Length: 509
Image (cartoon, rainbow, N blue to C red):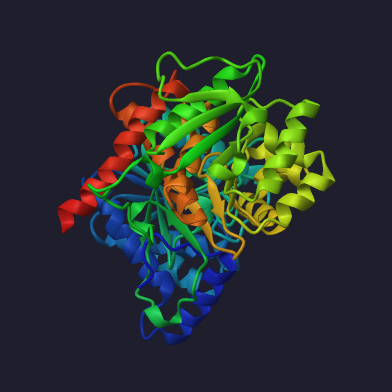
């Protein structure tokens, strides 16, 4: 059976649903979904005398909701269905589930009656308004119901369970459509048949809550191979190697940070410190101008004029605080000619976006390239807008990876990692504490250090993205942040995270 980590598109889920119904004997998938949802709901609301509110919409998701109501009522729960549909328009299976709920004693509430019930002490709200088929803005009475439900659950601290997806969230893209951002804010999402990418990136990170997957007993052999997987240590197809006693700094590679133009020296320093704490053998900063003599906190970092460095002698991380001067462009041009493993971030990406010749050089490279854009940098590279990038983060990352023949990390909530072969990862770590200046420079330095230590390009990107987010999570768990986390606080936690992966592997031997 596919695990929680494997992600499927809505089209794949619909195909699986069709195959599953064809093979289902006796019990339909809708009945299985309703039972699974009721079973899970009972773990959230253990008091049968506390009323449960279930919202049923016009499609099959409404049928799931009705069957959930029937199962809960059969187990002694006081259940009310907020019916936002004409049950006579339900397809036969959904209509059967609606009748089943009535038979078991569920009460029906019309949307216009809902306002009078705002003071009811609901123990749980179950969202079955819209499912994975919705790819448009929610308007009208449905929007009004969602706004009221969100207000009610927030004001009275009522847990919300979404069936399959929070109503209003696009499970392929993670987008809530429309300027008003109207969607159910769930504490839990019980998603059926397979996990879905939109629950884990973009708006999905704010609306889905904790995601639980129920495969509805579909046989494993009908599932397709998916190229999209959640990014975390359990999904890594590599291990963090333990260092040999008989080793030296030359084995762990050189990282050359190119950046730190006037007024942005700190960006280069942050990237360099990150590379140092991530295990690189030697770390250099090549400053555009002016040049600082050394980093007083970490004098191990060697400071040079960017023009004086031999780029082919290490992994180059270009862009942190690099600026957009002609000198910066000339240095970037020379770096692309050097054929060294390369991490491109920040100003390096902006320079490439503005120069077709640099774009061509990058696309024609045969050595490892990692690009780490945020949405605005991605938009510049693709000649689009931030809105268009965020409307489909997975597609944008795939486009960048294919166009520039590079591994790409599109930063943001649920960062996307793409390889030119079409492989996709959605990162699971991180929090809003990373939304501050300098954290991207730290990620770039970390990527460079892993490449210098011999990691494959795609593996380095996966590990770096997860460890970077995990560092912020560790800070929050210790009481630092998310508000006010500083980028300079991350490298120590990054070091701890990398070493913990080595130790956890060693402890399993």
